[in-house]
Length: 414
Image (cartoon, rainbow, N blue to C red):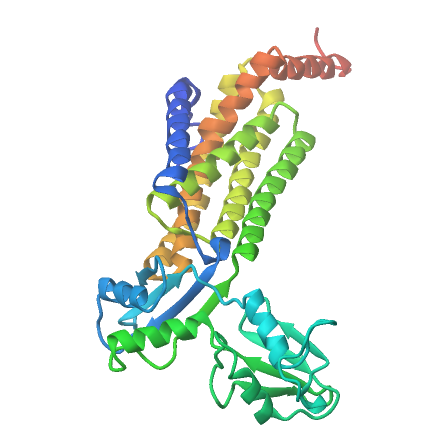
């Protein structure tokens, strides 16, 4: 299959100023969207609790938001989940996460008679059998782990924990369980923010509209979210640095800046498209950005490789003309590769759900700008760097090398 007839050439470089100007304007616009309307960070990066509920009846997002606020949660986010075969499914996010305050931790230790040395015990009649040797609180604040020297009395432990203000068991049956009989380990499961959120919805909207259980409950603390955000930024930067080193080693130092600027261009515009459409930035989005980096640099390396091959073949052409020739020769391959990949992403964008749609959207934008940047960002910038900092030596060096080869041939005519 050939989209471009062999031998046909396009003058890309004559229009480079217009396209580079458009790229700069688009990149600046993308950077502006990072602040207004701003990147919509998901729960992965900002922390919070997220539940997905399949409602029994149709309820507007305004009613759901009002019910969540009335249940005691601030600034809730309600999103309708539209996918084939599902109805009345919503995703609710709140900034609150499960947590046990230091005061509550101290109260738990006092109720279980395990206090710091020198402090008075809350109950002077604590039986030694009811005093644990260790208390641990989960980072999520939804579980307390206890260890005992002998077989614990679960009913007595449940009675102790029920007297603490702000501590609510998940259920009478599942609240206190023996996790490890040999180690005498007991786990106390507390009600999470997701459970409290669902209870609030059932109370406000009615049990005929809200089911007893959520389809999915996820949470992440703000500290862990900040760590994930920093790690995501570092991963993208490290990938770009290693790619720059690879291009400089694989080709020439003058090729590396063009490839890196093209990568920054592609990732920046893809993030800008996510910000304009207010799609969520999650771990999946970071994976999409890294995929864009890999896809874009692959296309750029192919163009660079053809430019390097054509330099000794066409000694009478300028560097700009060689770039036009090389891109024209690779244009058919680029159209087929990018087109097939884009078609698969369109299928995911049309029939996918949730994060898959966001992932496909980011990749679709990245494929478009990645193909464009190889032609109108990376190659023109390489030509400018060669002219500005190397005195146009790329073509001159190839001419010298080619003449030396001709002179060394025994049958060469001088």
